[in-house]
Each structure stands twice: as C-alpha cells, then as structure tokens.
Amino acid sequence: MADRQRIVVVGGGYAGLAFIGQARRIPNVDITLIDPGDSHELIPELPEALRKHDPIEEHVVKYQDLLQGTGVKHIRDRVISIKMTQQQVILSQGQVEHYDWLLLSPGSVTAYPPIPGLEEHALPLRNAHDAHRIKERIREQEGQRIVVVGGGLTGVEVAGILAPDHDIWLVEGAKRLLPALGKGLAHYARVRLQRAGVKVMMGQKLTRVEAGTIQLERDALHYHVLIWAGGIQAPKWLRDTDLPLDHNGYPKVSPEGQISDRVFAAGDVWRVYVGDDEVPQTAQLAAMAGDYVGDAMARAIRGEPLPPPFRPRLRGMLISLDTGAGVGWVIRGGIPVRGTSARTLKSLSFQQYRLKLSRAFGRGWPF
Ligand SMILES: Cc1cc2nc3c(=O)[nH]c(=O)nc-3n(C[C@H](O)[C@H](O)[C@H](O)COP(=O)(O)OP(=O)(O)OC[C@H]3O[C@@H](n4cnc5c(N)ncnc54)[C@H](O)[C@@H]3O)c2cc1C
Image 1 (cartoon, rainbow, N blue to C red):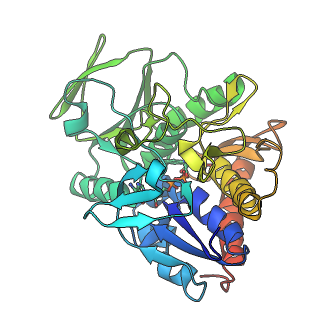
Image 2 (image 1 turned 180 degrees about the horizontal axis):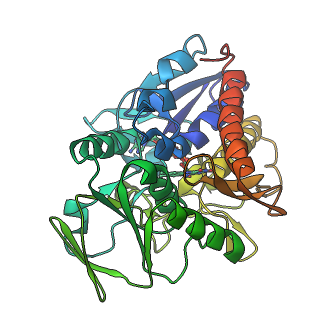
C-alpha cells in the first residue's frame, strides 16, 4: 500500500461532511470532496426558508468557509459515473479522478411516479435551487392558491409554513397524513393545519397534471403554484456505474457501510435496516452514518477489523407546523411532543447541527 492514501468523497451533504469531519483525523490521507455546489445546504431548514422574510442564503454554509485551512480539496463538479474496478470516478466534463478509498454520499433525488404532466408542471423541494424557484413563483402569485401534493413530513411542513400568507391546499392519496409519526400526532398535525387555514384533501390519488389544474381520482383542483412533495429515489446516474445495485437502483451496502473493500456509502443512498424495518432517510441518520463510516474507513485503512454493524439511535423526529408550532417525538421514539415545545426543540436541533459542523471543521461560531 502506498504511503499517502487518497480519499474521494462524492457529495458534501450531511453524510459527506460528517464523514470528512472524522476522516480529517486519519494520518497520511489526502481528502478530495467532489460536489457541484459551492455550499453545504441545510436541507431540513429549507421549508422554513420559504417564508417571505427568511433568506435562503442563511440556510447554506459555503464549503470555502468550512474547508479553508483543513487541507481538504473541493472539486466543483458532478460525478456522472464510477468505475469501481479501476478505482475511478468520472466527472461531467470527462475528467477522471483516481481514489484509494471512496465515500459515496450524493443524497437522493425527487421521485416522479408516471403521472402525466407531473414533472413538467410541479415544483419539487429537494435543494436550495428548488427553494429559490418556489419562492420566485410564490412572489409572482402572491395570495393565490398553492397546492402541495404529498402529506409526508415535507408536504405537511411546507403547507403549514406557507399557510399564513396563502390559500393552501394539501393533497394526500392515503387516508392519513404523516405515516412516519403515530396516529395521534398525525391527527394533531391535521387539526393544527386546518386551524391555520390549510384545506386538507385525503384519500384521492393524483392522476394527471395540466397547467393550472390537477386531476384527482374523483375531483379536479385549480392551482397557481403546484409543489410536489411525493418522495425520493436513488440518483439515476448510479445505473451508469459498476456498483452493485438493488432493484430500486440503490447501492447494495453491507451493515458496516461497505459497497466493496474500498468503497463505502452513507446518507440517503444507504438504505439502513434495523431488523426488517428500514430507518427513514433523514439528515440525522445521514450525519450518524457519516460519522460511523469515517471510523469504519479509518480502521480499514489501518488494516484493522471493521466496527460492529451500524445501529443508529435516532434522537427524535420533529416537523414544523404553522407559526410557532411543531409535532414529533424525541428520545428514541419515547416522548411525543407537540406545539411550541416541539417547534423550539426543532430549532434547537438546527443550532446543534451548526455547532457540530463548527467543531468538526475547527471553525469559529457562528459562521
Ligand atoms: C424539504 C426537506 C425537508 C427535510 N427535513 C428534514 C428534517 O427536518 N430532518 C431530517 O433529519 N431530515 C430531513 N430531510 C431529509 C434530509 O435532508 C436528507 O435525508 C439528508 O439531506 C440526506 O443527507 P445526504 O448527505 O445523504 O444528502 P444531501 O444532504 O442531499 O447531500 C448530497 C450532496 O451531494 C451532492 N451531489 C449530488 N449529486 C452529486 C453528484 N452526482 N456528484 C457530486 N455531488 C453530488 C449534492 O450537491 C449535495 O451537496 C428533509 C429533506 C427535504 C427534501
């Protein structure tokens, strides 16, 4: 094995940065981050950033500010393929980067089921660019009707946050909101949304989208702005790699985070199971996986056995609702919380994450 080892990280999100925070401590390694953006985007904060007076710029952290003086190199480009057998990643302009060790952490992308017109007319919310587009459209259509499709964590948050200034409709195909939370909390969220003026339509699937109208199984609904919060999937370009993939296009990852001896994964692309249950893909899980895989790769580089399989212990799941309220649970699913306390805990978790970043990269606080 050559003296200095080259670690390449694909994607500087929650998983990639947590990993780099750990990997910086490994002696004799050069770390290269490949990410097309200039900033780490605090994605869970983006629904809040849709508010009129909340600039999106306050919910991103420039890589330059984080990485300055750390020795970590940032290549601002997109990976379009990986040749695992040759230890190479291929960038969008054809540039080839060699790695000794690779972390795959490019996150996920918006999933569009085959509903005619959906991709053409609906706005997704997956990154800061999407948030900018939504804000622009909302500004143009001030006071008009916004339809949010998808009653999961993102859809409910977006509907609640936009409710004070707009005519909001939330559409969900199933007969309940928030499948990730218990029935009582989901009921609380619905009542709270309705009190804030959100019209909630459940139990009808979306069948077609046209400019200005969506068609549901029984009803049609007029819209000025349509936001799609219907789910995520693995990035499609993974199919152009020689990584082993499952039938949904996600890489096959061992319980220790390995795709192969030298290739690890973390974040949304690693579907983590505890027993038969899949752990929901969240920023919290991604950051924990990044920390874990940083340690696992350090051991692999030293030629030591890997740590015991990854067993995330989630600290909670919280979402914001209308002004000043939230809902969710904390402390390993044990304590349901709602109202202002849930909202305060959620804001606290955002600050905790910033603090974690500032410590991991030795940066002053606040950024
Ligand atoms: C609107 C919304 C609200 C959410 N709210 C919460 C919440 O409240 N709490 C929570 O825990 N989770 C929340 N999540 C989920 C959470 O944001 C994700 O699970 C988390 O960001 C995943 O982290 P990651 O590191 O895998 O990917 P990301 O954080 O998405 O980072 C991926 C990085 O990879 C880069 N990248 C992508 N493709 C390539 C490529 N081809 N080459 C190089 N780089 C690439 C991207 O530019 C990005 O910087 C929310 C998600 C959304 C969309």
